[in-house]
Image (tube, rainbow, N blue to C red; front, top):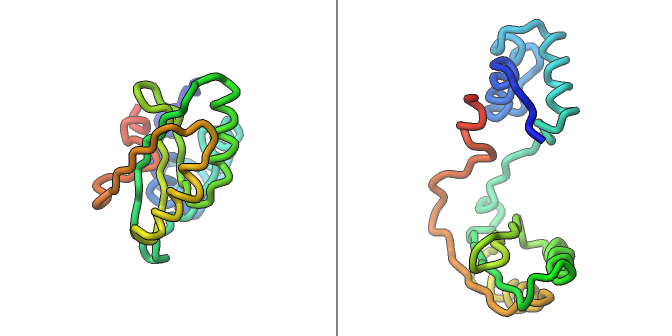
Length: 158
């Protein structure tokens, strides 16, 4: 379902992407609405599901997790039951930060955070390789982040 947003809705979202902790008063000033009208718009964006929530952006490296590993996973079959079984199991892996069902030659693209190579080896051996239906794991190691956005700027421009 696509939701039509006007210019003010997009301004509200842009400001929240820049600073999710912005006060209602400052937000209303920046988008050119009264605080009441801005609060009403914000509530509508939340209720419609355009804004799903608010989160802190955490520096994983500062907590000792210096490796981001991109893992392409291939399953032995792609039946509905096989996919559901895999997805249920991977959701329980605490080191996985995202998992996407893919088109193409690999079935899933998974992002894993690890402290170092030894930690990733543990994750690989004790978790990823034991997931149901896995026949191939291909790991790539991110050298550094170039762009990491929660949403494309194009989405917010109209």
